[in-house]
Image 1 (spheres, helix red, strand yellow):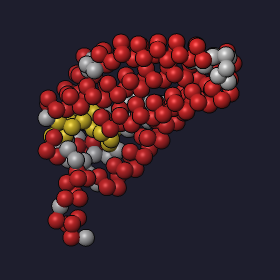
Image 2 (cartoon, one colour):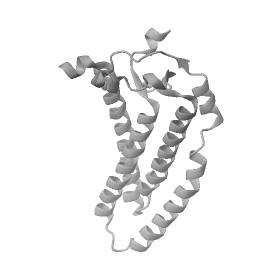
Image 3 (cartoon, helix red, strand yellow):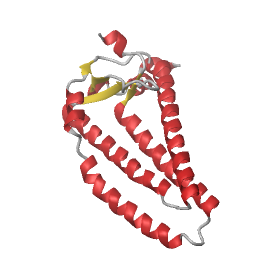
Image 4 (cartoon, helix red, strand yellow):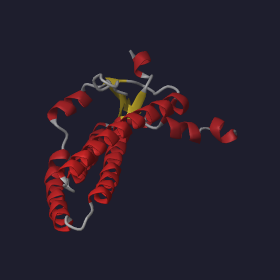
Length: 192
């Protein structure tokens, strides 16, 4: 069972944090592009009111997302245990890059769609709504990191397919959590 678990894994917390970061960057860049296309002269008041509304909604969403939903908690509790992640320096870097490319593509398409909506409706608010999504993703990553601390495990997940469901989740004991750091601190790595 562990054989198929070792290929193509990425840390759950890392993936969530990078997704939140990419979403926030997408929100800023798409809003800047929309403001350049639409202009700010007539929309300053709307932008200020909208920004305050987004901050209020983000603060309202934050406490809800800082707790893991029961379904996700059950998924983590039922995660298949593995003892190690094989080939972290080669395979895991490739998986990380693939996962990040897919996330960047998703955020880019979503940001372009929101800019298109803003340009056609002459509104400056659509891309700012990505900020709420970024806050929710960041809070979910914090909740997952809290689950890992409480349970003494590190969660790894298979990279989801383009149209397939999310990858299967595995748990690794926290002592074996960072195989790359362990390799770098080993006598073999220091001797080379």
